[in-house]
Image (cartoon, rainbow, N blue to C red; front, side, top):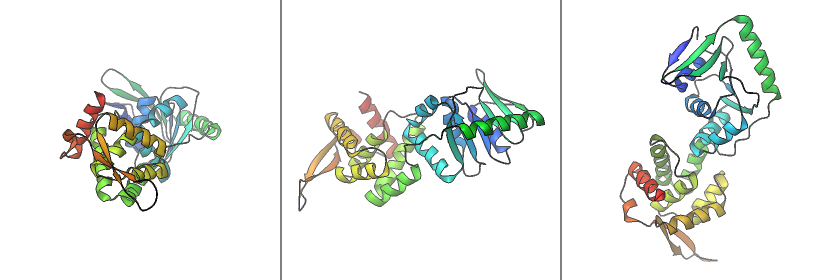
Length: 267
């Protein structure tokens, strides 16, 4: 990246700045929006990225399941590392060749770049030291790849495909509105799985506790989205089979299913 750039989005500037790096890079003190875009554009082709960000910004982003689980995938793959950093600066991308300040305007985002050797060397030294002194940020959300693989193993390919399709539909439509436990239960009901099986999977993989799944199931029952039927077992109390409770949710593709469910939850 030899000169200043002007792009429509933060993601475009980040992508261009990181693509020019031959070695690992620092992305420093980004706000919530920048952290989100960084997670979305980092991939296996990128050199490793060291993210230094304020804990509040990291928490705000990692409260969103899709972003947090993607970040966990990147961390597990060794292409992203995250540490807390509370010494605010401009939003910076620091590589071995350049320092880029990311500046937003009304309709564009600029990457203001310097390739001055002494300045770049000084910036790298500063943030390498900051990195050594920074506390690692612990992600509590499991990697999305692990979520998908274990769901298919435990509840079958159809349930995993519906889960993936519903997350994709919600992501494309711009937002959270339905949390990961609700998505899991709705997909389980769509496939008439047992509450025990989906809640055990969710607790084992690290999405939420069985108690959280139970409370969410009760709420969805009260709202009429799902219903349950008792399934006798040889020993112990009967298990509950989840079913869709509203005709409007039946016989829909994943995109429509996500849209209708979100609309019903909002009322």
